[in-house]
Amino acid sequence: MTQGSNTLHLEDLSHLKYLELKLLEDTNGGLVILSSGLSLSKLISSLLLLHSTSQGTLLILSPSSATLKSKINFHLKTLNPQFYQVPVEITADLPVNHRHSLYSSGSVCFITPRILIVDLLTNKLPASIISGLIILNAHSVSETSTEAFIVRIFRSLNRSAFVRVFSDRPQAMVSGFAKAERTMKCLHIRKLHLWPRFQVYVSQELEQDPPDVVDIRVPMSKYMMGIQKAIVEVMGACLKEMRKTNKVDVEDLTVENGLFKSFDEIVRRQLDPIWHTLGKQTKQLVSDLKTLRKLLDYLVRYDAVTYLKYLDTLRVSESFRTISEKKKMIDDEALGFIANSLGIFIFALVIAYHLVIADPKYEAN
Image 1 (cartoon, helix red, strand yellow):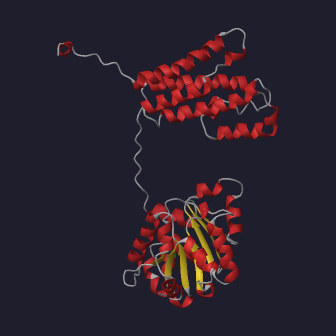
Image 2 (tube, rainbow, N blue to C red; image 1 turned 120 degrees about the vertical axis):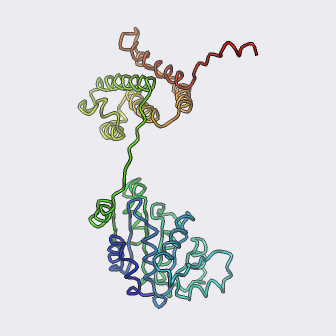
Image 3 (cartoon, rainbow, N blue to C red; image 1 turned 90 degrees about the horizontal axis):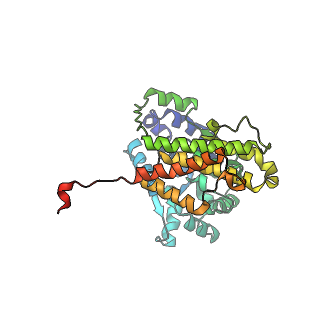
């Protein structure tokens, strides 16, 4: 199957077709990070259709998800039904001589990482006849992973073959320090291909057939609004206490900012350099603000019983301290804090449990 014979079948994949050309320009391969929903399986399938037996055997490390493998096979059949051939899967069940014949066949094969590394180390796999290696889980690759070890051994035996690594979980590629750079380094890859939804070719194709979005919002009950109001007031009290430390930028310490996830990062960025000098109360306030923001988030995500159970867990683990712990006298501000804390529990109890009065005519029975 040559590249020319598949051109007609890929006309509808404009942004994927352009990405294919970019990948084919680099004979050493690269790291491709797609935005979620851009059909990684379709991209892999179209690349497999461009493979020719004369190039050598193409190995794909079997993905942990069976769904991805089935999608690749489905798109292979859809894109080119006339020349469709299911990639052979090499597992431990196959004898050595059968595996060797598959390695020499020049076809596309799925292979488990364990079998591949064993055959590489025992010289049962002639690496010189392998045209390339495809890895589908770049987000889970690390310096100590099996995939990194495989690539290191494979590169030492065959420097002319390409290694292409893919991931459709961009959020997992930003965890930790320089995740993408470390992944490229351990896989000996030089090029990085980023394809977000706002990329020109992607956005143009998405705009051709925009989806119909139906926004359905369920209004909060009066008790949920009561919990929300109480949490916001408690957050305001915590922020007021933090302002008294004179160690943070008071302009960023607002209740409005406290409703967003970025607020934790803002506070940590300001306090990290002086974290070791902060008192116990200030550190606890930072933790409390994070917990209160979770309570706001879970209020609209959890059902009433689960939310109450989470509150009970907090009550047991943290004993729900109050600002007045270090005050000799309880002032009006501390009383308001206590009232709001109790209000959260009371409203949660009212939502979770309803009083049902039995009909008198059934009491006799």
